[in-house]
Image 1 (tube, rainbow, N blue to C red):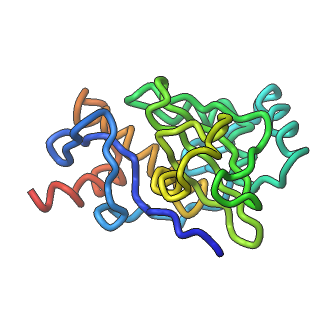
Image 2: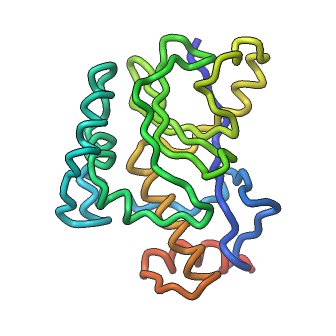
Length: 206
């Protein structure tokens, strides 16, 4: 039976517009503003037009691709240091590509590929590759690659594997928006019209 993971978004505060009890908070999907995906074509030109590939990063992606078929947008992004450097992180997250996939601890036919982690592993993000479906992104406060998860109750595991985006590019877009906005509202960095519209979703309700 296909697992329906809980949906949500592990995010941070957005200043006075959206509070967070801790460093991260799990916000409901229904509470989030929509992300404009009209420019999402797998090239990430909306982020950095013509971003070059990085030879070392491309080698890492190619090595991973020997073990599993990767979505084109994922391979494109993770092969470019320029694209990764264009994504700010207010919590010190780093893109950290796993050298190989691991089986899902709750769905053995599915595979997980770690690609982003908080500097203290408070939240870790994975590409979830399930046969017959489009890849999506999950986030977990647990490192799902470690030995011993077979001893954890399955329902507890599922509860800690949150579906945060329907696609990799959708995830990157929202992560970029939210982290850029954090620096905008908390440190005065410049924001774009798209960011201001995203923030207005919250400020309109204040």
